[in-house]
Length: 313
Image (cartoon, rainbow, N blue to C red; front, side, top):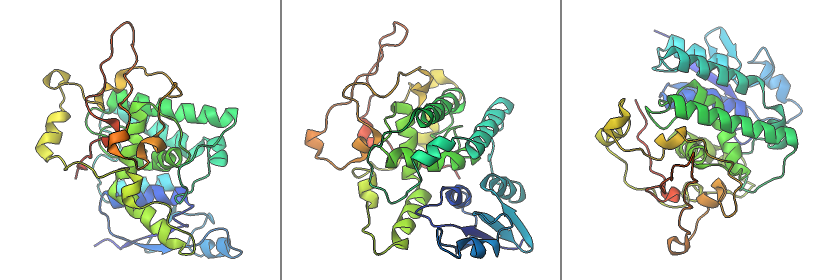
């Protein structure tokens, strides 16, 4: 019988690194205890060092074992608990997922500095410098590459939810909080992250950490309006088939198109799409651009009402 896991976390409102392994474990319904430590206090480092050898959060405890660093925690949990598809099965997809996760773990310093993680922030745009803008463009390119090459099996970067999604989830929340303009596939991916039940749970817990501060958004406000009825597993299965000839292209599957930057006149950011509004006044979705002399068809559904997904077991 395995000893129970304990995850040492920083503030859920501020600690993006803590979110990564927490989300991965919660997605797979792994039971674990939490030790939540405030950050930015005079004794914060001393309190963290009581649990984490690096003096940083997160840190996973299991008996006498201590595993620090979010990527190492996710891999340890996947290996010891035999969690399905933590990495893609296909070697090429698995290599890309690992490379993306490592790049996320080690890079994007300017993005982190200029758009700090704040789970309580009301979405609002912020100007960034050239290096941070380059980081944003790089993240968007990685998402498009993963979705277009390996994302047919589901709504996540490599189809099924995996470590790569856990690593990029805080960036998706940053893009929402700072109203970063995104193209359709990227915007839909951020929406899927935001709508993950565990992410909603995290955001609610973050708001509860600071009762003296007003709650910025309710779950309904985060998603702009009520979702349609969930699809049945059979309906989801028919949408993500191995043979593209067996089904029509969906908004998720059109990610092979090389879409232009999102800063087109009249285009809405993700925050605009998620903001509450009267359905009668909501503008019609802008048509997709013409790509390589082939006329693109408009999205078959209102992008504000992006469909909800049944998460794989």
